[in-house]
Length: 346
Image (cartoon, rainbow, N blue to C red; front, side, top):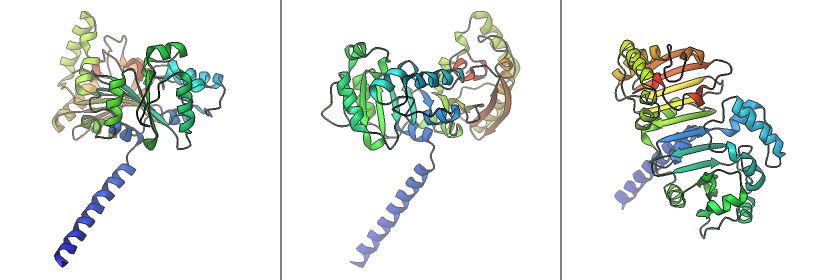
């Protein structure tokens, strides 16, 4: 009997320790890390916007009752500051604010996850959210209510056509109140899967670059395979591609990376984070890619120095980071989130 009680006590202590570690780890994760941990496991391209931080950065005091014009002004200012390019919602912002009861004027953050199988927009809402009001809005807009509270509200092309001015990503909506989340997608089945697998582990390959990105205002985060295609110099015309080959040969060793993240930091400088298979690759690529990021920008035009000043470049284990200070009036994140981008070539 004493042995059984003792064993049970050990099990309880171990269980409590594991729970405590997990609680501590979660408590010290950034919103971006939590969001990526909730994203579908097949996500290849993630686009992050911390709407609460963007509103604070731009001095926008908005609520669900704010006039429509104030939301329009906020979105325009966010565009000019290159803080909204990662979002799936700018074109829908007015209708979301007026008709849906949530929008960039009120949500905490947005993660737009895309894969070859589908796409989903994940929105985190404040604790003060009136979920019943949002459900009433969806009914009034013509969405078909699910049997399950966390099920999918079905809209589709006909519903969106009646509403007008909203992205196809709003075709279907799921309210996950216990996580303070709204998920939307243009594909009902993919949204159902995203909700069913919510929190199953996220995308492990991205953990290192996500952690290195800190608490950004906005970010573009790609798996290595996706980035090597989306940012490839193969998208440039033949002359630019030939110039890129010459510049890479002069710069030194360039290896394929396993994950990519470019983020706008709270001071509006940008950070590039790349992860590699080995420490040696990260060290070698810190040198070669620093050279590439300081020179011509074939396929983009001009030099990278026209767009940003290159700051610290460092490797730490398998991680490489670059700090970029944008030239005033440039749109570094939006311009360099699609290829060709020489210093992100594989």
